[in-house]
Structures are given as C-alpha cells and as structure tokens.
Amino acid sequence: MASMSKMCSVPDDRRVAPARSASGMGVLPMDVVYDILLRLPAKDLCCLRAVCRQWRLLLSDPAFADDHAACHPEPLIIVGCKYAFFPTEADGDIDPDDEDWKPESIVNILDLSGRIVKRLHFDGHVTSMPLDHVCIKTDEDGGRQLIDPATGVMYPVPKHLAENADKDVSHGLSVHGWTDDLYLVGQVTSTGDYKMLRKVSYTSGCMVDARFELCTLCCCCDEGWRVMCDSPLSVSWGEKTSVVVDGVVYFLSTDKDTYSSLVLDGQEIDDDYWVVSFEFETEMWDASGPLNRFLDNPLDLNNEADGPWEKQVSLANLNGSLVIVQVASTCMDLWFLMDFNKDIWAKQYSIQIEQYVSKSLSFRPLFVLEDERIVIHVGGLQLVEIHDPRTNNFSNVANVAHCSEISAYTGNLLSLDW
Image 1: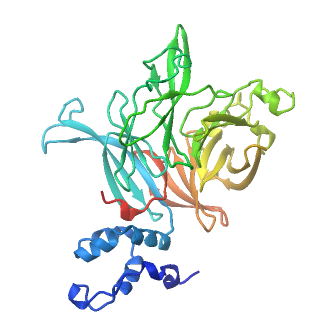
Image 2 (image 1 turned 180 degrees about the horizontal axis):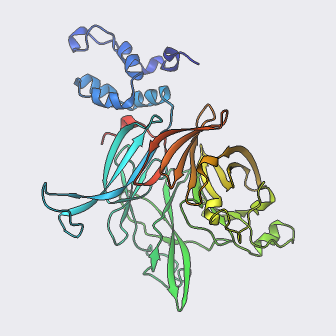
Image 3 (image 1 turned 90 degrees about the vertical axis):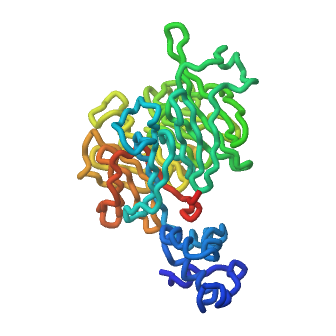
C-alpha cells in the first residue's frame, strides 16, 4: 500500500507559499499545513474552517477540495429519509394540515463505517438521488426541483408541456392525467446538460394509456416537456427495473413483440426479459435480448415461487457499468454488460445469500470497492452491508430505517457547505 505522504502528495503548482509567523499560522510553512490538512477527514475540516480566515480560505478552495478527494477516494453513501413535519413554532401539537407546519426531508451522507459525515435538510419529499443530486417534490401538485447539494444550484422541473409540443403525438392532451413519482435524470456528455424523462398515464375512453415526456433542465428558465415517440417494447417503470448509466436509461421489459423475431432471426420467443434503452443525447430508443439466452437460471415469468419477478431480477449501476441483478433461490448473480449492441453480458460475481432468504427482501448493489468487496442495500431489513467475495461473509455498515432513497455518492464533502 502506498504511504500516506506519497498518496497525499500534490503538484508543486498547487502548493501555497509559506506563511509568515505574523499571519497567526504559527511557525509551520503553509505547504506543511496543507499536507497535514489533507490527511484529515472532510467532516473535521469543515469544523476547522472556523479557526481563522486563512484556514477558511484554504479549506474552501476548490483546488484543495480536489486534492483532498484524491487522498480520500473511498466512496460514500447518500440516504434520503422519509419526510417529517417540523413546526414553525416551538410548541403546539403536530398537525400536518396546519399551515404552520411544513414537510421536510433529511439527507444523510455516510462513510463506510456507518458514521454520518454530513446531514442536509430539504423542504419537501425526496423522490430520487441521481448523479449526486437530490430530486425534491416540493408540493402536492407535482412541483419538483433537482438540487446539487455540493453547490446549492437548483433546477426547477417543468409542470407543463412546451408551447411547441407536438399535440398530435400527445393525443391532443395539453393537461396530463397523472405522472409516476419516479423521474429519471441523465447528463448529456457532449453538452453537460441535464435531461429528465418521465412517464405520463392518462385515460382514453375506457382505456388507460401512457406516454413518455422529456425536458432539458435549466436553472433560469422553464422549457417545458416534449413528448417522445413510443419505446419498441413496453417497459417496467420502477426504481429497481430502470437505471441511468452514462447518459443512457435502461429498462427491463417483459414484452412479447415482433421485435423479438428481428433479433432472433425469425424465432419467436414467448414471454421473456429484454433490456430497453433510451439515450438522452440522441433521444432514441433501442432494445437488447432476450435475457434468458445467457442467464444461468432462466426466468419463468409465470412462476412466482421465488417471489414477484421484480424481486427475481433488477437493474443496477455499479461503478458506471450496467448490471443485471438476478436473485435465484439462495444466490445472487451480478451480470455486467460488455456490449449492448451484440448482447454480450458477463457474470462477474455470484453471492450466497442464505441468511437473507425471504420473499419480502430485495437487494440493491451500490458500488464495488477497490478490493472487490461489494456494498449492498438489503431492502426489507433496511440494512447496508458489505460482502467480501473472498470469504463470502457480510459485515454490517448501517441500519437505514426510514430510508426512502439510497445511492452511492461520489461528490466532494468539502463543497457541501452552502
């Protein structure tokens, strides 16, 4: 393992000129102080900003934050807790219908020891935490914001269709029926813009139909939603059956469609899993599958002996890779996507979960550490566990009771001071 001095070394052009003794910094040169501070945890550094003005300037410098992040590469966990009602007055009984009460969510950032290293408060209800951001539902009529907790920048989410939306594609509807709470967020690589995809359901006569809408988020204007063309297969819209990886959102699908015959050279496949993709940059759909061609334990959609199909298979983003999580009996297999166009997947992990066997549980891998240990959220028990594939043992990180959302966090703690 590299020594701490080597790990925390920084380029000469990043170093600060030595401080004079009259500056109140003592007799240590500033570059020595710089190296010492790099070794401290981010939570302690946030407190040390109060020592003096010079330290506050140093510890608020983005260059120092980048160097500190390089010295402490261990990922973090961000947890959104279910909102509670907090009073605006110090006394009185809790009445959620009272105008003096407001919903508030708590977002905790944990290290791998389970310690809360940062706590943030937001007005509203946390609905998702994509790309190191927090999506907040601010009121009951669908108002939402995407917030960057590192900078405080807020992106208001549009409520209505754009003025130039294709009314023919939207079936002539300018007023929506209802939307799912899950809004999927991706970043366009070429421009850095954030885009959001949502599913809108509506009634047409006696039938219930749905469409997809997309918007580009802007902190200073409301561009409205645009109606997208339909996906080639029906998709499962849910937290465990959809995930965004590198600017592309992937869905699980259990559709039987003529599209399958195109992929399988005319052989029609009944009731199988597919992966459907939507790219935020090109705004185009694609599909790959069927998955039973390579899974070790082929899925039977009509057999729920191992629980609902959503608990048998799910999607995850592990360290920037699309992963199929398949739970079969006492084993959880992790299949990594190698090539979407060629439909190539590789099983890289097989985890024994005998101690967690229960139809009421779900498993969501959050990230893989450098030593190949895997951080996993066990839904139902609301635990964060670390699995060591070398010993096939689990160790507990934290109990995340009342958790509504959980994700890996790769942002910089020193920036969380707005």
